[in-house]
Length: 372
Image (tube, rainbow, N blue to C red; front, side, top):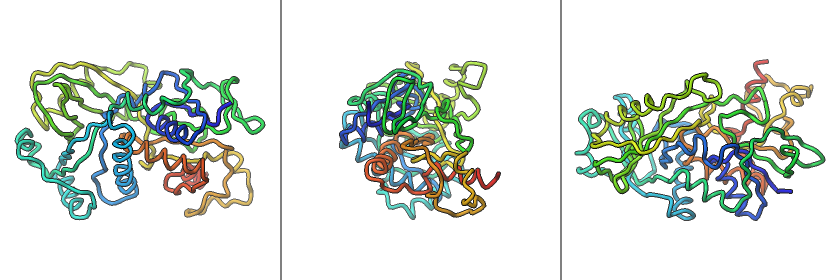
């Protein structure tokens, strides 16, 4: 018997596994393909805030960026490459936004070196940029390190049944609590109000004679070079889904897209493609992640005392699956949000600390129920 079982070994699942095992819990981690086998393994794993106008997601990512940089530096310094980040606007509209961002942000900004600016192509120099200290982590090794002290099963979860105060998994394993961290892949628990977007990603590692000392973000992300190797990626393709498309993903087209996007920002010389990484990330329709307890829709709808036409409400009156949680929907910010959301969920499970409604999966049930 385990204290907790986590289904999905991407960055979200591994981050929660790390937090809960560190708290002394006996944790079982499942993944049908292996640790960081999906979207997390394909991630560029750039640690960056969100440069945008004000809003819930920007504020969440601001806090997550500060927390995660400190978290990685403290716990996994060997897997973190600290480097300046140069974010370049894609167009005039984004240039105006970056100018406003600079006026209001509390983050410590810096002036990019002239040497770096000289590396940019004329097209990239036309637009506003912003620079600060940030970092890149090794996606695969980070997930493996986080899950090092938990029990891991490379096994697809086919059945999940609650019986006599315990969750029974695949008719074999038992755990008091279960956390779903399955990304945009096939859901273990089917609920009609949970609708995650699949965001396909492709990253490549290339060998190049071009030296780059910082992370550069414009049409995609370009990592700092180490021993002549740097990463390009990852793409954000909302049209391809490995479980729904009949045709396999076209690796060659993906490579061309990555190199074409990078070529708008800086000239990369003597390119040799070394490795490809592909996988599916998950995003929500309101772009905020989902963290917390899962509403039982049928049981909640059957309650005659709840008015579902109320727009602003607390979610305490809903009926929830016992000891069942989810952490999902981080989209392209998995390695920024993962440790921060894991902290929030762990504190909720261990200390009953309330999770903000803006993150709760129950917000989607409330919207769905109003439309019925």
